[in-house]
Length: 124
Image (tube, rainbow, N blue to C red; front, top):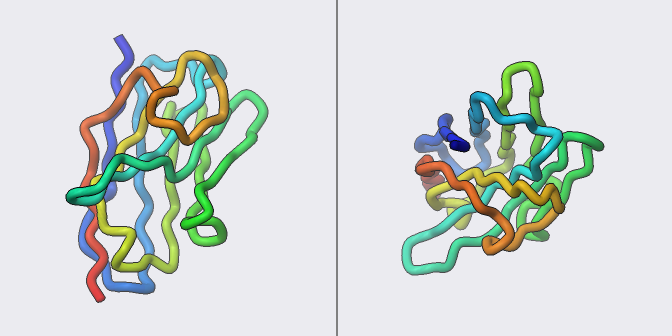
């Protein structure tokens, strides 16, 4: 069974930074694509960033390009989302997800395994 556990969320002022972590004990990263998604109240879940560990390729939503950075640590079996220059509109529950197909995508339907989420709140 694939387990994904997010952490690192919290309350931050606009312009600040947070780093989210997605721990995946026992997961072989090379076999998966890992994505970060977010869902704000009343809105659909949307893809934020994705990474394929085997070749280091990353993909970002236009709304976060230049501000967010996704990376992984295969030794710790953890994927990170570094979020800088945060804006109030970044407020959401952030989820990490794993796609056993290993394709780079920001589509919710592409991902089979999901974590429970971590809340990020950006105050103005």
